[in-house]
Length: 124
Image: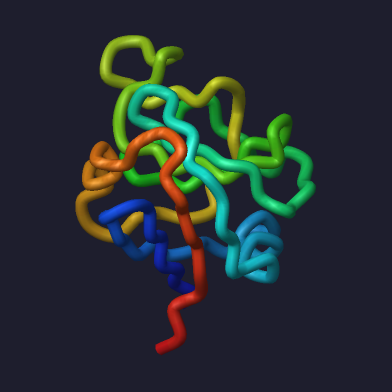
């Protein structure tokens, strides 16, 4: 099982990767440091990975990690976005889900736009 650590401002969380090509490509690109962009209860930031859609989803679950092909971006979903209808969590356009935050993903509500964010492998 592959796990990553996401550190953004004062927030640190771990996530588990799934067995997708997207997860493999992002794992190989780690570590990644970027500046967080916020969009509703989503954080996204550009990463050095270029992929097409892979089983892309229009609606995701709390804590999902997504890869947004049009923006070459990693996304962390922890609540409603401006595109959500009702209580669903809806990305701007379909994303490849490649992992899930362990525990309470709403800790990312504390992260401000422009915060430094680091994603790295957890070696166990």
